[in-house]
Each structure stands twice: as C-alpha cells, then as structure tokens.
Image 1 (cartoon, rainbow over the protein chains, first blue to last red):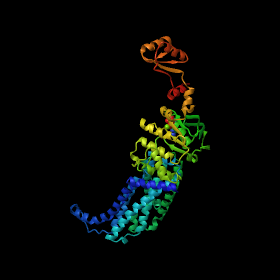
Image 2: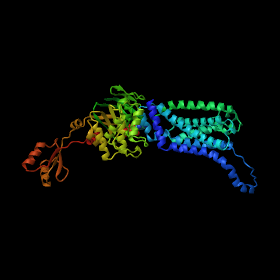
Image 3: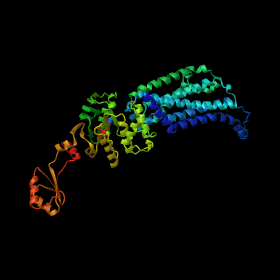
Image 4: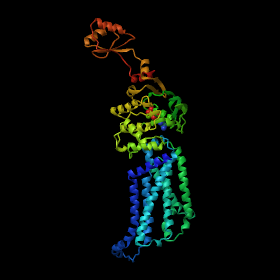
Length: 256
Length: 297
Ligand SMILES: Nc1ncnc2c1ncn2[C@@H]1O[C@H](COP(=O)(O)OP(=O)(O)O)[C@@H](O)[C@H]1O
Ligand SMILES: [Mg+2]
C-alpha cells in the first residue's frame, strides 16, 4: 500500500509541477463559462447580423434563448474538453518509457499493477474533477439566468457523458500497456472512438455503442428516454472494467 | 557475495555470453572490464533478474537469482548505465519517493537521505533534477542505489560519460564504500580500475579471460623489461656498443630485456665507466597492455 501511495503522490506532484492540472482545469472552467455565455450572446449576435442576413433574403425572427440553448452548447463543447484531456494524458506512460524512468522504478521492486492502478486513479480523479467543474459552472450560470428544469433527464445525460470520458481514460491505460509511443496510444484511442461512432450508424447495434452516450441533446429535449441508453451504459461500464483488468497482465508481460 | 557459473546468453544467432564464470568476494571493489558490446550490461541485467539467461546459474548472497522474480534484488543496489530521474523532483524528493515505492523501513529516513546526499556531494543541492549534469545524475544514481543499504552495489559504466573530474568524483565515492559494501562496477576505462579496484576480471569473447587482484595480475604478467636513462647521448652510445640487445628509444633512453641482457652486467658497466644513471627501472605493465596481451594469446 505504501508503494502505491508514494507512486500516486509522485503522479500528482508531476501533474501539478508540469502545469497539466492547471491547463486541464482552466480549459474545462472556460468551457463551463462559455456555454451560458454563448447562449446569452446569441440574440445579440443575430441582431448584429440581421441587416446583412435580410439583405441576403433571410428574415430573422425573434429568438428566445433559455437554459436549453446553454445545455446544447455543453454537449457540443464537451468533446473539445475530452480531446484536450486525452491529448494531455496520452503520454502518462509513454513519457516514462521514453525517458527510462520506468526501468528505474521497476528495479526498485514496486509491483507493476500498482503502477497501473496509481496512474488510473490519478486520471480518473482528474477527468471527473475537470468535467464536473465544467458542469457545475454551466449549471450555476444557467440557474442564475434561466431555469434548468426545462432540460429533461439532465442528470442522466451528463452522467452518461462522464462515463464516456471514463472509457477514453481507460483506453489510454490499455493502449499504454501495449504500445511504445504517445502517437500509437493516441491512434489507438482515436480508432476505438471512431469504431464506436461507426457502430451508431447501424440501427441494430446502435443502442449498444458507447458513442451513443455522447448524444445528450436527444435526452434533454426528451426525444429519447434515459432508459433507452441503458444498454450502452452497460456495455461501456463492462468495457471500462475489462480494459482496466486486461491492462495489468499485458503490462506485467511487457519488457520495459 | 556473487557467484556466476556458466552464464550463457545469445541474441538471435549472436552469442554474447558463452559460459561466463565470475566470483565477486564480499567486501571487494570489483572492476568488470570489457570493451563496448562485450556483454557487461547483459551480465548485470541477468544478475538483477531483468533478463532471462539461456544457461548457467547466478547466486547472490547464497540465494539463486530467478528471472522475473526480484527476491535477491533486496540485497542489491543498481545504478544503470544511463540513470534517469523525474526532472520535476528535487534529489531529496526523489530519494524519499524511492524509499516509498520500495517500502523501505528506516527509522529516520530524512537523516539517511541527508547522509547519502552528503556522501555523493549533493548535500547543498536544492534545485530540481531537471537542471542536473550527467555527473550529478550519476551521483544521485549512486545515492538511490545505496538508499536501502544493499550488500552489493552494481554500477553499469558509472564513469563512461563523464569528464576526468566527474570520473574522479565517482571513483572516490565508490572507494569510500570499501569495507561497507561490495561494489561491482563495469567499465571500459582501465585507468579507473587501476585506481580503486581490489579485484578485476576481463570479459572478452563471452568469457572471463583473466581474474584476480590488479597486483596479482601484474605480478603474474610481470615483464622482464627494464628502462634505462643516461644523462647524455654519448653515455647511451657507450652502453649500446657494449650491450647490442639494448633497444634505443631516445637520445638518452633505452629499454632492455632480462632475456638477453644481464641486469647486473649493465649496472657494473655503468659503475666502472662512471656513467650516472638517473633512471633504471623495471617496466610495470599497465592493465591496458596486459589486456591486449591476454587477448592475443
Ligand atoms: N535486447 C537486445 N537485443 C539484441 N541484442 C542485444 C540486446 N542487448 C544487447 N545486445 C547485444 O549484446 C551485445 C552485448 O551488449 P551489452 O551487454 O550492452 O554490452 P556492454 O554493456 O558490454 O557494452 C551487444 O553486441 C549488443 O548489440
Ligand atoms: Mg553496457
């Protein structure tokens, strides 16, 4: 246990001193503020553009913005946050392979699975913290300006999206256990997400695809019931656990 | 302390180690000499159980080394050829971290850390490792290897990448461990070995070609060559005329071998002809020349 704690502390120190925490938290904070801000600015922007629009033959009817406009922005911007997170964290193992620090650690006698679990725990806390920060900021502004109750199934929809982020986190872990370089890890994660997305194009398997969890807009507009996503939630949860479990023997076998 | 018997290892069809036998006595400072690519690092990784050997056995402190398990590593401190650390930590933080991940028991860890940093000359260093020179990293590497008070310290070419000053510092640290810790270090720089080692072994062609203390080896291969120097060239000419087998190597310098020239005859000739000899000395072979000589046989 002591070796696990020491290693976890080392990871946090690294994330703090390298500025990775700051960047991630700032990005998510910014996204959290941007969602209601864009909603707020929409009528003003349309008005500013109305002249040129009517010249082009379009008439701008009075737009009403509310919490929905802001939540739609939330689900539109969340991928951006996730991409930044994955880009920053993809090198969490590979940097240590490249630098040779991993060999130094392993000759010290720490069990390899503890290295995996320590890094997994740090990424989990970081993703969750950043994501829920962004959510809390948007939620706060929304309830100040408008009324959050117009969004249906809000809590399930944001929890589902968080779960999709968890899957990406575990994909980083999994590909780091079998790959050597950061680019390979990124390609692995990207290819997996693309694969999940392609699944949603096929009606038969769509409801099982983790990528479905990113479609929060259908939930808040009430086009879909929160229950409709349960198969995808199950598949994603099983993947998260299975990929974490698979990473351990794969990492044990690897020659560092 | 460490006994290796018949160690074999090949990469593909390349035999790197072909039945290497090596005994490192407790308390020794052991120089493991071989040119680049001789298999020094491979041997060390096998000792640490980091690399699977194709044959042979290794015991550390009487216990067998098993590949993949690291039970015998509790006796060993290891400094790899290129030690790497987390640049964002200070030396103190790194050593505390090392103690943590190896679950080391120590009553007063911070005192132990200070003691080690002083030993390796990093006691005053407050900066992060990021800005360390090669030599400083090498010294920190020794500190982290010694942290758990190992019985055996294994250093892989600790001096190879350093300038003469840095090399001397590292060698002095290793020398200061004499009597407390058994040290096995590899090198291709023979001068390092002559300076501090109590025992040396030459690795060549996958086997140990020569092993013993430097003095023993030198004695065994002691040359019968003498070097002689006169004050002026005319004196040297006289000697050369009298002893045709003397090999002139300079105006006032020459060498001769006992095989064909008698030492006392030279001395008597010099005495009776009033030729002062500022220098008359038996040539000590350097380990370097020995290494080459052994190789040629
Ligand atoms: N992992 C490996 N795969 C293939 N060949 C290797 C490997 N490690 C070492 N070698 C080869 O084994 C030989 C000995 O290497 P090494 O033990 O590193 O030598 P040294 O440390 O004495 O310079 C070299 O010729 C090297 O190319
Ligand atoms: Mg080497």
